[in-house]
Image (tube, rainbow over all chains, first blue to last red; front, side, top):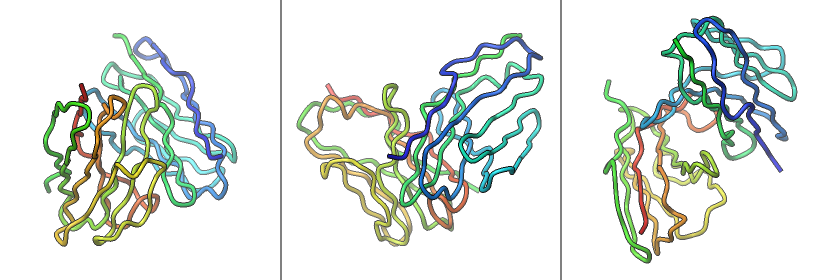
Length: 108
Length: 114
């Protein structure tokens, strides 16, 4: 069965303290892996799409990487405004599977 | 360009009732997909409509149904509400469909079933 697992569930960082979020997946026929950011009371906002192992994408302090089994979202020198829940999702055959998310808190 | 609009923002219903939620996609987008988000189960795919046709469906009971109109606006209906249906219902739109490109999400409808 297709599964998407994100870790850790929650992460507290000091401003400037870099870290990584993990998304591991077991999907037959991966068509794409997506990262979204969700703020409280809002819908998810698109960050990145990765399609093949070895691919990397960057945006400001965020960098997403993909292997055959997992994806990482690296956050470099985070700021308090990076606090949010980060969701990964995989597109398999006919549906989109989301992970439970990592709730990131960045303290000033 | 206006974003994805969902109405109503909040809804309170009692068990056994039915509810209809509305979603207006970004202008020009032909795909609308629906998701249920709960603290325990996370975000789960309900179904996708593309040009008025249901293209994909998640693993939800038949009480959950939807439709899409010629102007791409979509409605989702839940009949015979159960307590476990309490959730944030999100819709998303795109021009090509789920998995082909990024999705644009609305802010959701928070449904509480008492």
